[in-house]
Figure 1: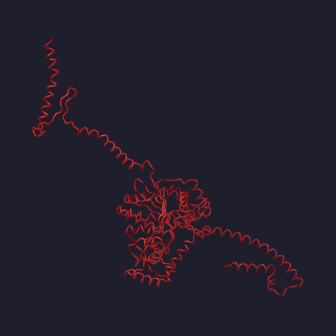
Figure 2: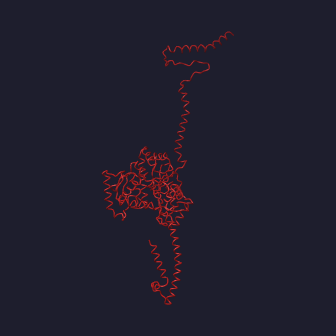
Figure 3: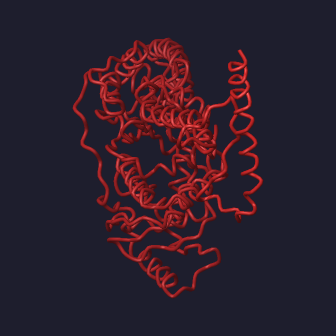
Length: 518
């Protein structure tokens, strides 16, 4: 028993002895110079602890704690990238934008201004491809509740809201955003991009300087006149003037020029750095009215390099020009077939079936115009052509001398204040008169239908009076005939009686016709 107790005592005291030895060695460490490389310190042994496994330390334990956070970050990053890539496929693929260019001298961008530019753009979020159509401003369409007129009348009456409703109703569109701009916005944007290079035909050169002058006056942005036809580097004002030209050809050609300027500006934007593009967005933002914020516009500008402006066309594709009442209109042939083709172009939809509302509008347009059959697509109007009108050729020599003088003035650097141009007064006055007539054209056309209605009522009333007078004259003629038989012919007016019964009425009709002649 004693031997067993002695062994038990040794087993109990052994750990204590090892602990004392460990403490002694630890106390001796400073005397060894603190060199722990050969004999690192060890944790005191305890019966309740186990020796540490090789290679495990605090760094490894800290790494184990960071792994879940790192995995969570990677998961979030991958999820965001996947969402960015797949959102166009599961969300709305196409973004549709309506663009209104307003001919406004007072800066007004809503009702009361005429929209000379009407465009619809479709952006494919997957490919970055942009399809663009210019809707001709004279297109005959329904612009209100059962009200038909030229399409730009919708903007004049109700601003962008009524114009958007007209586009959506007539073209079966769901428009996401809109932007309305004046000429100053376009000029500033193109100036910020460094201008565009354009080939100017002789006919375009004949008219463009007058439009440059007028644009300088209306925007307050300086410019100079062009000195020659051919290739020219245009600043913002000059590019705007080019996009407004139509005196040498048609409105179809004018919209082609506008799309050409836009295409060239897009090419410049794709080559510009993000800082320039953000500057463009900030410079034009005060000059526009839009449903988008400055952040959205800046983001679109920065991503311009990923966009490709593809096909640009004029709408309606198949069309005829025709007078409807007093309105000189562009009539779609038919609206329904044009809408089907439009959706194929903008959204890649084959065999699109227009809504019942579009079919109803199309039927009405066909009824009032007499153009009920679908036509062939018209040839796209081009740029760089045109001819000088005969009435403008008469003052051509005077105009040429004035423009030559103005060109020399610009060339020598002797420019008027604010760099305003000094073209021929005759040409400038003619251009201003033409633009004034165009601005008033909408008002005149709006009054046409009511005037025509009043005229019809007046004519009907006049016809009724004439019928009554005719009856009275016939009775008077019969009476005169009876008097003639009795030998009582008046000597004061033998001509009437010589002409027979009703001559007085005929004479009165002639006098009435002369008084109605303007």
